[in-house]
Image (tube, rainbow, N blue to C red; front, side, top):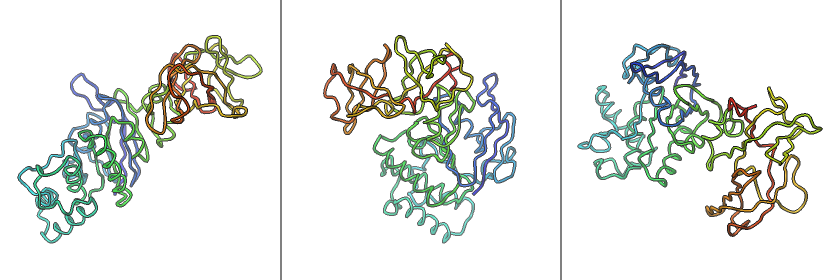
Length: 364
């Protein structure tokens, strides 16, 4: 195992600047997920760590050793690709052990490692099959097994689940999570899927246009997004943004949304805020719930909403309505509302709401 330290890393392709001076420290044994929209630079960063791309500037250290000039095979990393990259004419066992054979490892040791990796991944009965006889999920397990047997210092995953259907993605996420818990090796995982990022990561690194927009524990980014980009990217359904202005001159600070005044909790601190400042109020569906008997909880506001759109998902329903003329979505229990057009009392939890400067789109 090893830590990874990236300092002022740049990657250019001619005039195109793909990675723009990234600084990143990944601790020994940490599961870090690089996430972001297509073209944000996350796969380029991963491939540069692997040595498949040459850094234009900056340094990459693995285990305290600068590896910029090392060949990929000498960096002691193992990479799992999106397309499996299995040899079609080889059995599963031979695919898993191929890299060890190329390094002239003794056959008994190869057999032992292949057997152990197959046991961990639940593919022992498949060892004599060819790749064409496997499902997509089974092929991905073989690709992961080929990485495991090398006992690398670091595992690199480049969108390994994007070719699988939804059910298989769920299963494989669990397998990869269990694998990390079992071997505790440093893992760096690239995805554009925010659900994968939230469920797998010890730490999320959210990228945008070749830069790190925000990094931290998944719940930190989810509950305390640094910008509207982070807030809108993480969470499904996504956060709603309502334009308003700060009203700070009264007894209780508030946000004015049109003719509606939404008081803020007294404990809320607003860095750099001023009277009349244009803001965006960020509300996630779970911040809006059906009001129950009694007064609303401290820091919550009650609002009578007329439901415009209802999206049942089983145990929950997502109901869209208008708050001060802007569409917002509430997360309700399945039987809270039965059809659009119903009026429903909604509690808005202002303790958990996010507030952003409307001009910079940064949190305040």
